[in-house]
Length: 605
Image (cartoon, rainbow, N blue to C red; front, side, top):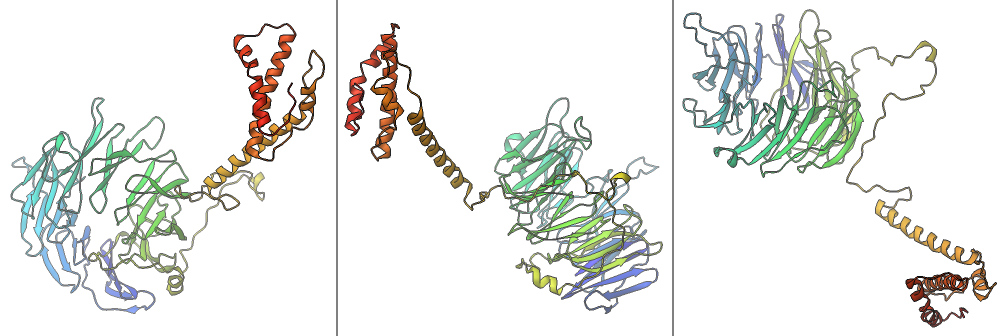
């Protein structure tokens, strides 16, 4: 296994061999390979390049490595380190291999022939087995310069003048199919298949919404043939990400400016090839910093919200599976097996790293890698690389190799006038490193500890009069991780639903007790005819049958008889009763009989 580094006039390759890491250095002072920890020492010679290197690329299985100098393009076999072919072509800016490594694509800056006034072809496709040119195209802009393939290289697609052109089996002399979408600006081809699926984005104009449509190749018969479609407003640019199975697409729409937000507005949309489409719900306002699919293709993580940012794991129904709380983070990375999720804060943040076990939803460890511009997991899923590179940062260039438990295994600084431009692990064939059970304690015992780079920890500014005292407020309120689908236990250990039912039962019992007390202790009404037997019954404790159901019925009957007694008193005082009140007086005898049937001898005569 190799890590490839690009320096000005220097190329470095790190190799992962069995239990240890090794690296090879290529530069003006020679080329050598050195074993990294734990078995340090010299290693075998690696043929290198001392000239200025513009760019580099690996194919998907890591069997081919290519790089370009000012006047040449060189491709080697990484197993034997022998040169596969060499091309005399100058000023190559970008390069890329097809997934199987059978085609090498190179892009140069666009130029015009001064004699013919015609553009010169600047996008070249070469057969890596023979080194022969397959086809050259004109590609003016560097943005979206590269064609895209499926994993099996069954089809290749490129965007040309508002249409998508498809080629089959790396035969570029014939355009097999075209997808016409008016003013299409972005597209995304799912890597899996067949069947093959592709999504195209058309920005909205003059009050019309933007939209994304998903098609199955080669069924491009207009809007009716689309597998799914999603329209939305507030979109200047989009980023589209397919899951590994090609069954779901995430579309992050963004605007450059907004009245409410300095960073513009973002919207995250979920589209399924089954025709389902929705807006991914977010529980905190603010921008969407990063969206990442799990390699398994069944989950995705979103980092969003004003700082401290929130991170949430979703399923294929866009339902929250787990909330990682808030913290200083703006990116999320899954390891190649999907078993570890790293939440990190780079750029203007301090480089905090959080590693989570995605199965147990457990925080493994936390670390800090300041001034990180490149982060990449090793294909084994247990090691990772961080690097500080130019031109983003020209001071403190170097790289570090870590273990997922937070142990720093190796640290190399670039000294002098050299600059580190790029760092990249060598790819491996799919299935080389299967998912393994994470053993935190054993891994921590095996990993070697190396002190991090020395630095001054920046503290929070406090005015002189407040120094030496405890702060009276917190700048940010951090939220703890939580599972939105888990029943929250109460202090007594009961579930939320059981606690709710218990509260209802207690409330009913308390109400019955208050009713009994009020009946026993309420003062008797002032009757015109003087105190009678009813007043004595109200003043004393109401008799009980010992049966809760019978007592409840008896209380209801007494209430009705008390109301009748009040009506009789009002009639005796000369008040004119209404018809319904007169009818209520006629029910007195039947109520007394029902009360007597319960075995109670209340005197209501």
